[in-house]
Amino acid sequence: MSDLTTADTPVLDLLARMTADSVATSTLDVPSIALVRLAALVASDAPAASYALNLAADAEIGLTAEDVRGVLAAIAPIVGTSRVAAATGRIVTALSIAIEVAMAELEDERVAGA
Image (tube, rainbow, N blue to C red; front, top):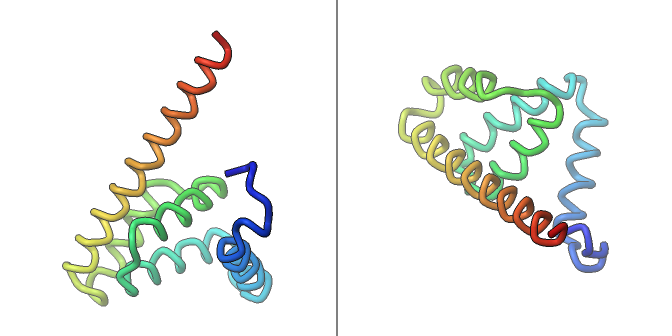
């Protein structure tokens, strides 16, 4: 995706600007914002792609699988078991796709280097 220009990704660019503005405006620290955003994804019944985008950013700031589990446990009484179960499945899907992409990139690098 690094070969794409801004004109090629207007929606992703908009989302990135909205996120940056949200972080700049919030009084929370970045890890807290990430945890709150994860809770909002669960509450809004977000698709796997939303988890993929957010979890990639979360990993970059140092959030762990334990942090994700903690959020899911904390919000379960509010959003309900079905939302947490659905979110868990979507998180697994997002992580599986991320692993497949990473493996394909490694294979591409191996082939290019051979």
